[in-house]
Length: 67
Figure 1 (tube, rainbow, N blue to C red):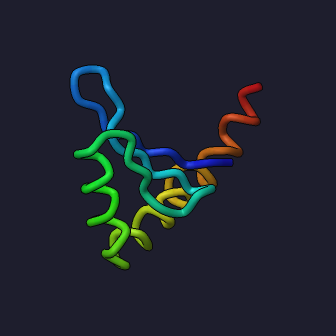
Figure 2: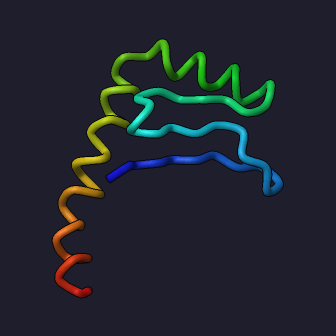
């Protein structure tokens, strides 16, 4: 299970957090700056890592039961 949070502007992804990578990755100049800022904030990273448990792990059983 992987949690991904992406940020888009004009249909262009500029930053992404992936729980498997464990940090933000920037894809544009602006996105790289945002990723560097967010990656230097330990509370932001720990909050995003916790989102996997909040969204994914609590709902996976519901999805499997529906299949």
